[in-house]
Image (cartoon, rainbow, N blue to C red; front, side, top):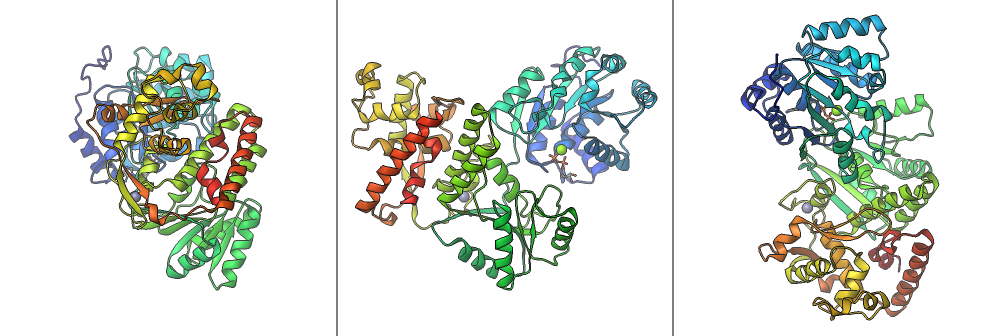
Length: 569
Ligand code: ADP
Ligand code: MG
Ligand code: ZN
């Protein structure tokens, strides 16, 4: 029997060295990936653990190897019958005893497997969440020695995730039915705070160790191209990479068809793929791409789920996608073999309108809609940030990287330079703190500007020591700075209709004078002077934006950012 009574004790005598040995012996890999190491060590130390890694990051091994090192049978909750079968077949083939229980089995078969499990014949037992709805089934499991319950695709427990499964809410009943409280491991590629909180809450994780890793893909060079003719940029790039395979994503079927036609007329071996084609046509297109008969696949977002082509050298987004999750998943199909590859995003302000329209059409619930707008906003921010794009991505997904990548379009851009904005950052942080972290960025900016607007005066903020601290700047400048500090992880906006600015731990270091904030900014001389007519247009558009914001009850910057307005002029 396992001594599972006090799971904080080192009940597992296994060490990382033993874990690595299993990895070599059974899986044939020389070493763990960085993220796997942390997650496995945490589990072996007896902690409830939440591992967040991108798709393909290697989550399965994070629970399979600890399961092999513990006595008893680890129960794995997995949402799809096909996934379960793949995993069990895979384990079978390397000689790890495992089985699954799902609706494809008769009741007699289920009982047989559970009896075998009770005799300790399996290291892993995969269970479909729907099974947990049967009390009888839970009773059956109640005699098992279970050192760990591993919840794969754990975002299914959250309504904020993209595929909520009500039966995931029953996982806790399973845990309660077991004779000893097992360790809990949860695994997902979804990294948003809300989903993370839901996982911890609904699975009742105890003092969970959370690891977000593996989101950086060092072999990918990200670029954003703005203000140029998209077709020209596309053609130029494809000509320069004539021997290489790539994917071009476009937002609509019509655009896919037109682009594919355009490329073919230019003599490029292009194929197309979208949901409007027949199954047969799509299968053919996919085949041709896989076997390099077509070099360039022009596709809608329907393309990619099933493809596993490792030598895709570039992914070009002809339109900006609706959010960072979608973008990174699609761009991440480049360079799966680890070789250097490019991810280009061709941006135009029009893309924001297309995506806004699509959100309006597809999302009814207003709460949900404003969440989608916020994500769209963060996607647009990616297109406008002067910071390292790789860092922006990693930070978006909740990870932390210390260094710029040195290869994205911002890292290598000649019209960007470094400036120290520590002082400005300190002024903003102390103002947010003085206002008790209870207000949005517009009001914080008004206070720093020393504005005499009604709300500022009503709340008595004109008596704060930070009032008017940034008088010499425009409110718009201050808001831009605040947005930059959000993007860099010093400030956070809360969720909801009226997002409130909060300081993060990172800001404390700056306030204490220990850390400096150095930012990449566009060189003054490189910025084109704004003409008078444009200023007028700009103001008009801002006015329009305010009206939309009022009508929809969302903050104006969620409608679209100033940088977009400027580009529209
Ligand atoms: P996820 O569930 O996170 O999407 P998987 O567990 O399916 O990812 O693993 C993705 C791929 O990575 C699999 O082919 C797996 O064998 C491989 N892999 C996992 N860990 C390692 C490792 N340490 N070294 C090399 N390959 C690995
Ligand atoms: Mg997986
Ligand atoms: Zn970079």
